[in-house]
Amino acid sequence: MITNAKYFQQQIKALLKNTSNVITIILTITVVGYFIGWSETALKNCVIIPGFMSPPTFSIWTTVTFCFIELHWYEVVVDFVSLSLCAKLLEPLWGRKEMLKFFGIINLGVAFLSMFYYLLLYASTRNSKFLFEVQIHGLAGFIASLSVAVRQILPDHLILKTKWGFVTNRHVPLMIVLFSIMFWSLNVFDGTNPVMLCAGALCSWIYLRFFQKHYNGRGDSSENFSFASFFPTFMQKYLNVVLNPIYICCLRFGVIKKPETSKLPSNSSQLMMVSVADPHDIERRRQIAMKALNDRLKHTGDNSRTSVPRSFPRPNTGGGVHSHSHHHHQHPSQMDKSQPPPHMVFTKDSVFVPPAIALPYEPLSQASESKVSNSKSTSETLIDLN
Image 1: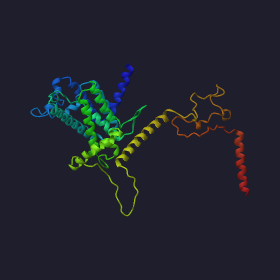
Image 2: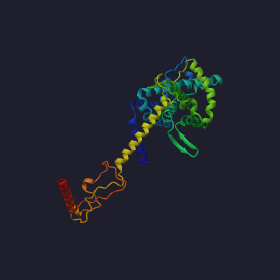
Image 3: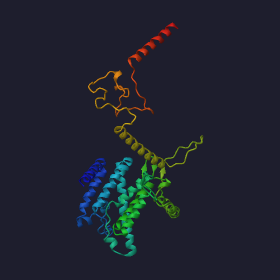
Image 4: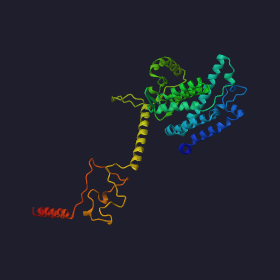
């Protein structure tokens, strides 16, 4: 038990050491918000209560503070792990400024969409509990938005292999929403959790699809990131029938704009056969390839420092194994022919490509050396005679 505690402590220190200042500040405020949740008065002033968002109370500041309030310790742990993964995957690609912008946009969107949902419930049921008993709080919406962002960057990354098929990042957003609804029906989660998860996933997709700016344009127009692609294949054609008219109306009224991507310059004097590919897909594949290459190089470097191939000659670490133990040095003619000379001993840091078949080394004796010298002198004499 003590060993496991030390291991988790080391992992937490490693995560905190590698996280940026932005993620560290968010985690620190979340921990503080967990202790603030112990006070009922402070809790009501920090979470979103739909009935208090209108005059005369008009608690508009809660749209900023609600995301840092957690009521259970395991929710803080989930937030910690999710934000740490965010610092590992997204922040190196986007930068701190874009990451902070994404955090603010998603949480504001979750706040207003969740509040609007409960106002609709009150308008349809006239039940006042949807106005004054619902408390919207936590980072559940932001966690759902992270799953959408990771799906955009690494859609085919394998998470789990089962007998029914493979689970990749493509399936994570929908699985999170479905599991939250299932746990809510079992009274494990509050009713606000599925609402916030759906709102966070929707806000994340809208921002990444139409508004996020990058070096080759704005948004992501690839088919792999369409809204219907989040659902099973057999449902996509039916969803497109419903969603395409909504998309066209939003374009016509200026609610959203078409994703902009960089275009190749056209030249009327030359006909060029260019493969039709989305620049965002190309960039995503490049990022996946670079990540795989870095992991492979790191793994190869670790192996080269810790292991030596069997075909490498082994250094004589024990002072040498000689035929006579009382002698420290032997003449080359008396050395074991199976051992290489000192200048051919390779260590772990040596760079050497061994042959396919290890060739034994046989040192020259004095007689053979004299024969070689005689043959050289004879050849030189013949050259002089010619």
